[in-house]
Image 1: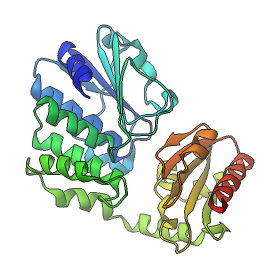
Image 2 (image 1 turned 135 degrees about the horizontal axis):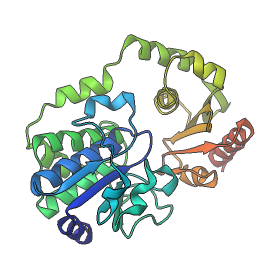
Image 3 (image 1 turned 135 degrees about the vertical axis):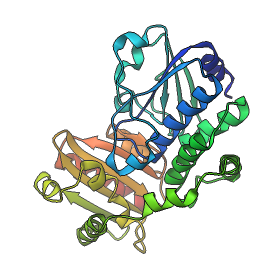
Length: 311
């Protein structure tokens, strides 16, 4: 499965790694893990990681994101990770590269690169990258292993989500043989400042039931500004305060921003991905997102979720 991308990595002496905007732990883990694996395997190669940052996952940064000129893409290989659609890629200059490759575990939306691996059976893109490193014999240091493992942990919900498989644990075991400190990962991921604990309490009080099986939170721009938190924290960071309500099968968090209404959808029962795709988004069967035009469109999506649970 990995032969063509491994061949491209071996061929090109300049490699630039991209991933999606507003990176989560999986996007950063797969990006930085692959960067270190390539650098450690091929010390003579130039390897860069580009894109924006999310404060929530700053602890994962093994180096700063690279700021590079357009000229560096000439004669280079660009690798796009953990991204299902072109519009979601952080830094669209990947198109300037001589060759492009993508590795992703989301449901397929569109072709993005020359060579692609879209493997939805993997719980995370980090797990997919780690599997390639295993199969291709790339050098995986403790630093690379720790970032890849962190990506696996975040996207599998600490190995609780139903995307977790025997392959997940096989790859995790391979990474843990590099003997990094897992306690620092969990401390940074799950120990929060008092501010965030109180923020979750506020969002818990905002939960509404659209039907007995569908919960939602809607935050307008004025409210969002009043919380003193970034949009990523308010949107993706708060969606799962609704995740353990008895009887609720699907839930959605709407957040108004200058760029539209951010929409994070989750379910423990239904494949909500087609609904996200209908509104220009994507993701996984039970965890997807989209950016909507306005509140009216948000309520239309909410109605679709209700209808799905009533089928």
